[in-house]
Image 1 (cartoon, helix red, strand yellow):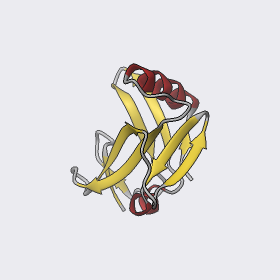
Image 2: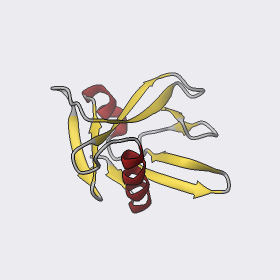
Image 3: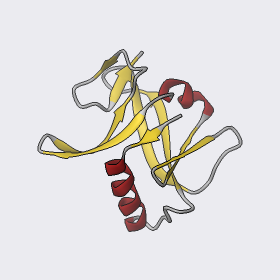
Image 4: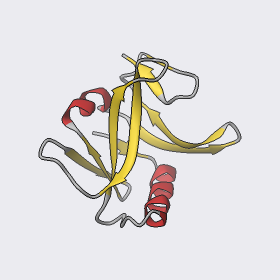
Length: 109
């Protein structure tokens, strides 16, 4: 399962509406791909089309969809939002990551 913090949920819903998506019916697609300085990097985008192998979760009023392969890397992850002085954006708190890069956008197992 993937969790969404309250701050991330509020920000995601606001951004979805700004981009023309409906937070009640549409979702955030989260994935993992090769790349980044640690070997794997996170992907996050708004979407409204699911695939047969997708897994869907809902937490704090936000739907999260993950493809089957990425799910193995993301089990137990908490999607958070940071608005501090060191930068703004979504942050993946991934218990499976053995190492992350300084920017927090890539990881390795």
